[in-house]
Image (cartoon, rainbow, N blue to C red):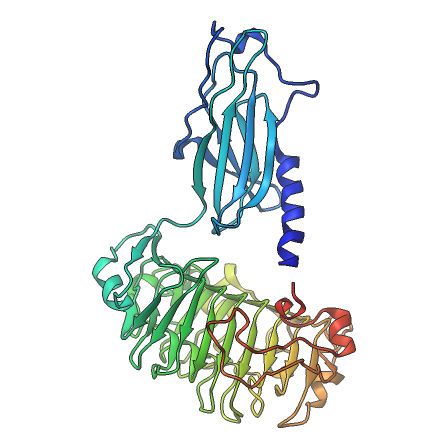
Length: 496
């Protein structure tokens, strides 16, 4: 809660800064806005979806501009803006701001429900009375979605309702409800958002044959997954029958210098603000096919593993080529209940072919790993952190401010020819001693890959994640000096 209000403060300031309020000495009642209206009871302007437009900012962010019809004879407008992701606890962004134009601009946040309120004010000179009430409109930046009814099996319902389309589709679970996923739900080539409620997550109980499958863009958000009974190799499995429409040849990469026959998922694949219990095998599984992903992200998630087998967490092994061009893992916790000397955290199939140019051609000859502010515990404690990554100077590793506890050989992630930035990492070995390269080698700026330190977690850290609790009944807050100085690890354990 503390961090929410801190973020709210900066957001509110930004919202107010962006506001277009042109009258410094009060509301402008110039007669050109009167339209001949006087001695009248005014009404507030009508607002609908067509009143909203997205603006691109120079810094890459976006804003929303809301424009409403002129109310002739009004002395201005009273504008209010709230976030209502939790309707019972609205967050006030703008309160009772006087606007003398017919528009306002505010910062756009993804996956957010807003309440916009506009009220026409009276005009003393024209003897017009203010509107009796404001116009209140619900504006959302969520992708429009079909709600899956309670009691429906997710795979059956989605497969019956998904439409082959080039446009993004959405499926939404009802907040606080429990669903089953008893077979693979195959999103195929479609771009899909599959989400729960932001403030009251639904829980998905995954059966032995359940799981997610795609060969298109996929965003999974705000859902708890109980994978205790799951036997599929991957929480997310890439299709066993890749479409020729997304081959390196069909996408034009081979004409641009690529020399591998493979398949590329161009749209982002994202897991955001989800929790996972008892994942026994891989989180991402390439199905032994030559798959590459342009953009794969895991953010603000807790992934509790019970993995004692040979399947890596990010698993593209078994293929002759394939890679993740841009990998982002941030503000997340991965922890394993089992010792594991067989599986890697991330594994490609072939190091010589896992070079960006060989898949994405001359124009795509780079790969970036952004892995920062995460807590890794026993992932994996008896095997290298990574395997079969290419050793090339076109790779960039931003691996910083992480805690690696009981995790072995981080150096196998960091290509010696790549650009490496590793400030603020700590590492500690339990099952195996820390490899000397992890603390003895430096990144491109002279920082060690990691600093040797027991994080001294508050604990417990060895419990299956309790999906009924926001932080699962575990506690990875570090007491150690270096971790605290750098604020290393998943920020949630600091209460941020």
